[in-house]
Every structure is written in structure tokens, then in C-alpha cells.
Amino acid sequence: MTEAPRMPPTVQATWSTDGTLYRITCPHCYRVHVHGPQPGHKAAHCEPGTAGKVLGYFIEPPTETQISTTNTTSSLA
Ligand SMILES: [Zn+2]
Image (cartoon, rainbow, N blue to C red):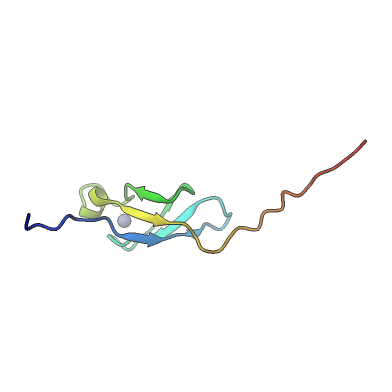
């Protein structure tokens, strides 16, 4: 085996402005693509027919955690 396997690159995601989606700067076409908030391998949102589109990428989750204010336990007894 002489040919190295073509591994998809890993990209660091950031949260979208409303904090519900992953935004990544594409390592293939250098555009910003938006994905659902699940890390792991993704098919790239590049132009059809490009190398990046075939290879895709691994998404790393954003490092900064979202501020969740779901502590609304109301006891109306
Ligand atoms: Zn792309």
C-alpha cells in the first residue's frame, strides 16, 4: 500500500448566532457552512463535484458552552 488514505480534515465549529447550529469555515472551499449541532463526520456543503464535497470533514464541537437557563422549576402548589 503506497497510497495514503485521504482522511477528511477536522474543523472546529462555532455556534451560530442563535446558538442552535454549528458554523464551520470549510477547509476545502473556505466558505462558511452551517450544520446541525452534532459533532463527527459530515458531508461537506461545498459545490457539487468538488473534492471537498466527496471527502467531507470531521466537526469538532464548539469549546465554549452555551448558557442554558432552563432552571425554571416553578412550584405552584
Ligand atoms: Zn466547502
